[in-house]
Image (cartoon, rainbow, N blue to C red; front, side):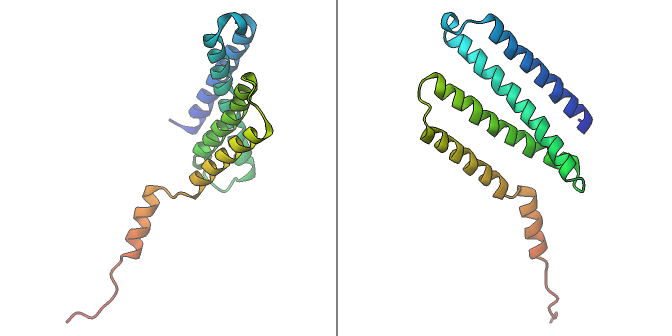
Length: 144
């Protein structure tokens, strides 16, 4: 899939997720719908925020870093959009259950930061195998 098609698909899917969230807000009473209504609310909000943050992150990276190929930061933008969505929806979920305090937000934020650091510091398997090949080149030793 080309970059343009990917972004258009992501934009359309995000639009429909926002539409679903507005419909959930408009037509579902959380006090009467119970668990299913809350699940629809949190799920539609999560996917809406993920798509929105991914698009914004991609566009910011595209503007700030024009030297790199744009497809290189698609995954990073999507992952960071997902993590920001987990932070926001997780905070709303904690608040809805009366469990939201400053240290729970701090723990959630630190956990997501540690997860992001893990993803940023790991090297892809392809790069590892290429570096091993370049380091294992035979030296020019005399043949006897």
